[in-house]
Image 1: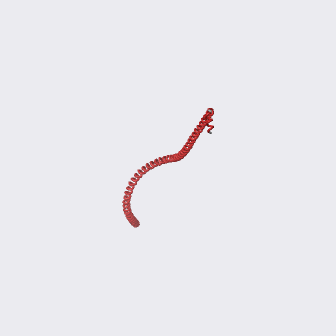
Image 2 (image 1 turned 90 degrees about the vertical axis):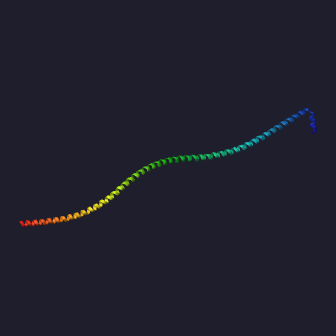
Image 3 (image 1 turned 180 degrees about the vertical axis):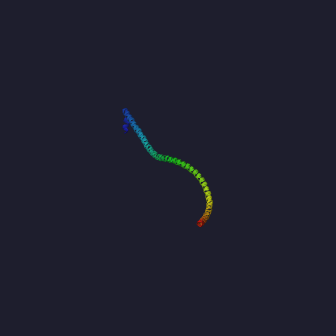
Length: 180
């Protein structure tokens, strides 16, 4: 090999060819090294992109789950809102009914107080009429007793009068019979 090296050093064409071969070899090595570095850089980028894509996919999955949860919450809130509207309508109806009932109650209460006042007045009149009735009943009983006494006396007097008239008629008839 020594000889080959000396022969190459003495011969300028071989030197030129050797220099060119070394330059080409260096260029090839440089191209291979640069390509290897680029492959390594692209490989690292690819790994980073895969990792980022994986993180993004996980983030997207997480966001989609949150979106589904929000959709479910939104559906529940919409349902509650609809129920709230129904409840609100029911409450308005109940309030209107309550106000009507309250006004009817107030009117009935006024009417009841008027009826109570009339009833108390009627009870007072009834009590007065009962006491007057008792008084009149006592007077009626007394009058009835007196009337019964008078009837009895009248009947006796009438019987006496009739018997006296008969007696007087008999006397007249006797007198007429004697006079004739």
